[in-house]
Image: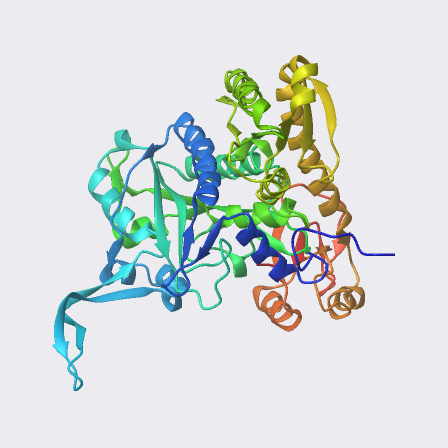
Length: 506
């Protein structure tokens, strides 16, 4: 039996990493830059990020947060104030040591630009902004009346990545980082958990990606944090992606940077701080969670264009009338609201063959494709194709029925993608309480055999040894208790009610 043809080669089953790169390329999302490890995000890819920004920004502001902006360059001395935090990023830091260039001719007479004007203190290109935002907080906070301080920043960061992969790991990437200061530990923890839930809701409601919510172990915790909460997503090669984190930092950063306030009893106290963020890595997560062997698959709420209308014009004499019918349909569609925004609709009038257009929009992941030809116009019908269904599957609907049901149809696409991803994830999480079975699970597969949920009471050192030897990590200690009954830790044999979710990750 002949293998079905696909628009993307290799397929997911043949070579998942190369398939991913080809999806990015064919969907025209991004490309590698001349700057090693960095990427150019192209308009289609950036529009996805903008949709994520709009959604999150609205929710941050609804919960009392304000946007601000802080410097890209951080004095080295600021990072030295928080040694544990800085050490966690030290090997990834890019450092600026000079403030100008001077022209110099080499032995061949060629002009070269030489760094000159050495700085008295080097600057680090921000890997994250805890230290410089902490310095601002120390200036802004005097009394308990100034709290809570709820700040978010949309920015770029730099972490020198040796093995870049578009959207997933690049030296420079875009993100948001929230930083807050609170009067009490309880308020700071409430903030940490609120953002944790907000991220989980965003992954589900915007990107149609189900996540496991939980807490990181000490070994996997953010440097300097007392607690790190995470949302973990499974993609189609069964690897995990840390899709967003929310950290309770205690008073560690406040003490390092002297962020104090006068409390209600007129005593000086250190604030309790949090930080939290998601990045353009979400775009990579989205690609790996939903896309197929024909290209990108986009949930409707994040798609740059939710509907593309393609005029089918076999004869020149009917071309103008068909295009007018398509534009009229687009106008009526754009008046409708889906997920709080007017529908995003494009009419593709380019002078290209219908098949070329069809496959371009398939590869770019547009949720709904509509074709209108002479017969459709005459019968007042549309030909509808959904991206969550096979490429050649189509249905013919009365135009008025399509208009009446389009919002419901888009919602159906979203939920079908969410259900598909949730079923795949749940089928690839296995409970395990025996060490021999645990080791066999990881040893027998050259790829990614799925996640294991185990009773766990091991130490940090035991966890790190196991992780290094088997090339796995504890993704989180899940919030949702799978089994409240006490069980013996699979490594130490100690009784525990704690469960650990293990997997291989990006």
